[in-house]
Length: 160
Image (cartoon, rainbow, N blue to C red; front, top):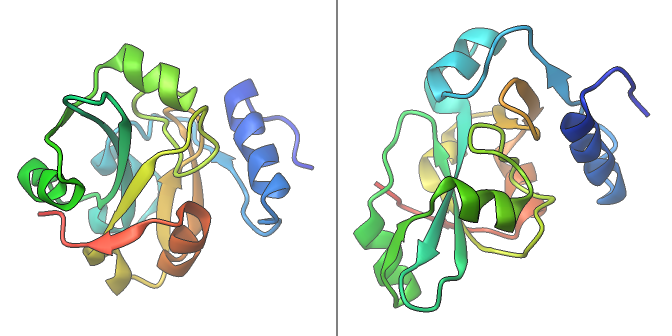
């Protein structure tokens, strides 16, 4: 077990181990990885290789929806609403923290307080390796698009 991580990064590392993903290593960077651009600069990759974990909320039933999108893409909320059969809206910071247990900018793909319907941006599939947040705004971990599918049980779709 890796030590020296902050509490939330360590919590996420333990969650990965619990899920059987012993090869994933949470890394805390000296600078922020809160935005896709910041994260790409910190790890030395393209912005598209950064996984943005964005939480939305269904407008009527108020259920959380997680969209794992390519760092260079914007989510087309109407497309996701059509897939769900219910309109989604951007979740506020309090809702995100309640449903995930993490702050915006550090939301990992798994390990949340509540299970969520998850959609994965098909554009992430073109990369051999991608990077996702790991519980804090400066913690990340490396994985493959296939790992992301396995971790989240997400549905691959066009999100832009």
